[in-house]
Image (cartoon, rainbow, N blue to C red; front, side, top):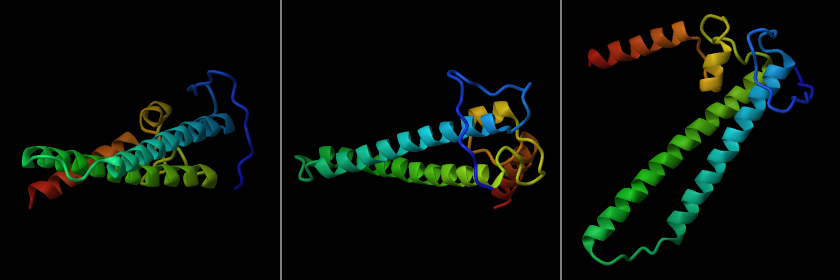
Length: 142
Protein backbone atom coordinates (compact mmCIF):
# COMPACT_ATOMS: atom_id res chain seq x y z
CA UNK A 1 0.00 0.00 0.00
CA UNK A 2 1.49 3.37 -0.93
CA UNK A 3 2.30 5.52 2.06
CA UNK A 4 1.14 9.07 2.36
CA UNK A 5 3.55 11.71 3.53
CA UNK A 6 3.06 12.51 7.20
CA UNK A 7 4.52 15.70 8.68
CA UNK A 8 5.96 14.92 12.09
CA UNK A 9 5.81 17.53 14.84
CA UNK A 10 9.25 18.80 15.87
CA UNK A 11 10.80 16.49 18.46
CA UNK A 12 8.13 13.79 17.96
CA UNK A 13 8.72 10.45 19.67
CA UNK A 14 6.25 7.53 19.48
CA UNK A 15 4.39 6.74 22.69
CA UNK A 16 2.41 3.78 23.98
CA UNK A 17 -0.70 6.02 24.17
CA UNK A 18 -0.92 6.19 20.36
CA UNK A 19 -2.27 3.56 18.01
CA UNK A 20 0.58 1.10 17.38
CA UNK A 21 2.26 1.70 14.00
CA UNK A 22 0.06 4.68 13.26
CA UNK A 23 1.03 6.80 10.23
CA UNK A 24 3.02 9.09 12.56
CA UNK A 25 4.93 6.19 14.08
CA UNK A 26 5.66 4.67 10.70
CA UNK A 27 6.96 8.01 9.41
CA UNK A 28 9.08 8.42 12.55
CA UNK A 29 10.73 5.03 11.97
CA UNK A 30 11.05 5.69 8.23
CA UNK A 31 12.99 8.89 8.99
CA UNK A 32 15.10 7.11 11.62
CA UNK A 33 15.98 4.35 9.14
CA UNK A 34 16.72 6.80 6.32
CA UNK A 35 19.03 8.85 8.54
CA UNK A 36 20.85 5.72 9.75
CA UNK A 37 21.19 4.45 6.19
CA UNK A 38 22.66 7.75 4.99
CA UNK A 39 25.18 7.76 7.85
CA UNK A 40 26.30 4.23 6.93
CA UNK A 41 26.59 5.13 3.22
CA UNK A 42 28.63 8.24 4.08
CA UNK A 43 30.95 6.26 6.37
CA UNK A 44 31.39 3.57 3.70
CA UNK A 45 32.32 6.19 1.12
CA UNK A 46 34.83 7.65 3.56
CA UNK A 47 36.34 4.20 4.12
CA UNK A 48 36.69 3.61 0.37
CA UNK A 49 38.23 7.03 -0.05
CA UNK A 50 40.72 6.39 2.77
CA UNK A 51 41.75 3.05 1.29
CA UNK A 52 42.24 4.60 -2.16
CA UNK A 53 44.23 7.58 -0.91
CA UNK A 54 46.59 5.46 1.11
CA UNK A 55 50.12 5.12 -0.16
CA UNK A 56 50.71 1.43 -0.81
CA UNK A 57 54.47 1.20 -0.57
CA UNK A 58 54.93 1.94 3.10
CA UNK A 59 58.38 1.68 4.67
CA UNK A 60 59.18 -1.36 6.72
CA UNK A 61 57.37 -4.67 7.10
CA UNK A 62 55.98 -3.87 10.56
CA UNK A 63 54.34 -0.71 9.26
CA UNK A 64 53.02 -2.57 6.22
CA UNK A 65 51.58 -5.31 8.47
CA UNK A 66 49.92 -2.67 10.65
CA UNK A 67 48.45 -1.00 7.58
CA UNK A 68 47.14 -4.33 6.23
CA UNK A 69 45.52 -5.08 9.60
CA UNK A 70 43.86 -1.65 9.59
CA UNK A 71 42.68 -2.16 6.01
CA UNK A 72 41.27 -5.58 6.87
CA UNK A 73 39.37 -4.08 9.80
CA UNK A 74 38.04 -1.27 7.59
CA UNK A 75 36.87 -3.78 4.98
CA UNK A 76 35.12 -5.90 7.63
CA UNK A 77 33.43 -2.77 8.95
CA UNK A 78 32.36 -1.85 5.43
CA UNK A 79 30.94 -5.35 4.91
CA UNK A 80 29.00 -5.02 8.19
CA UNK A 81 27.65 -1.65 6.97
CA UNK A 82 26.61 -3.23 3.68
CA UNK A 83 24.66 -5.92 5.54
CA UNK A 84 23.06 -3.29 7.81
CA UNK A 85 22.06 -1.21 4.79
CA UNK A 86 20.38 -4.29 3.31
CA UNK A 87 18.47 -4.83 6.57
CA UNK A 88 17.48 -1.15 6.63
CA UNK A 89 16.18 -1.47 3.06
CA UNK A 90 14.19 -4.55 4.10
CA UNK A 91 12.73 -2.63 7.05
CA UNK A 92 11.74 0.20 4.68
CA UNK A 93 9.97 -2.38 2.49
CA UNK A 94 8.12 -3.70 5.56
CA UNK A 95 6.97 -0.12 6.28
CA UNK A 96 5.67 0.15 2.71
CA UNK A 97 3.98 -3.27 2.99
CA UNK A 98 2.36 -2.47 6.34
CA UNK A 99 4.31 -5.25 8.09
CA UNK A 100 6.78 -3.07 10.00
CA UNK A 101 6.68 -3.36 13.77
CA UNK A 102 5.20 -6.86 13.79
CA UNK A 103 7.09 -10.07 14.53
CA UNK A 104 7.84 -12.16 11.44
CA UNK A 105 7.43 -15.33 13.47
CA UNK A 106 4.39 -14.65 15.67
CA UNK A 107 2.70 -11.61 14.14
CA UNK A 108 2.77 -9.91 17.55
CA UNK A 109 3.84 -6.31 18.10
CA UNK A 110 7.62 -5.97 18.38
CA UNK A 111 7.18 -2.95 20.63
CA UNK A 112 8.22 0.68 20.47
CA UNK A 113 11.12 0.38 22.93
CA UNK A 114 12.69 -2.51 20.97
CA UNK A 115 12.21 -0.72 17.64
CA UNK A 116 13.65 2.48 19.09
CA UNK A 117 16.76 0.55 20.15
CA UNK A 118 16.92 -1.61 17.01
CA UNK A 119 14.76 -0.20 14.20
CA UNK A 120 15.63 -3.15 11.92
CA UNK A 121 14.25 -5.73 14.41
CA UNK A 122 12.02 -8.32 12.75
CA UNK A 123 11.27 -10.46 15.82
CA UNK A 124 9.57 -9.71 19.14
CA UNK A 125 11.72 -10.34 22.21
CA UNK A 126 10.32 -13.82 22.89
CA UNK A 127 10.92 -14.95 19.30
CA UNK A 128 14.40 -13.33 19.31
CA UNK A 129 15.31 -15.19 22.51
CA UNK A 130 14.09 -18.50 21.01
CA UNK A 131 16.14 -17.83 17.87
CA UNK A 132 19.27 -17.03 19.91
CA UNK A 133 18.78 -20.18 21.99
CA UNK A 134 18.51 -22.29 18.81
CA UNK A 135 21.68 -20.65 17.45
CA UNK A 136 23.53 -21.35 20.69
CA UNK A 137 22.36 -24.98 20.73
CA UNK A 138 23.42 -25.46 17.12
CA UNK A 139 26.83 -23.97 17.97
CA UNK A 140 27.23 -26.20 21.03
CA UNK A 141 26.35 -29.37 19.12
CA UNK A 142 29.07 -28.97 16.52
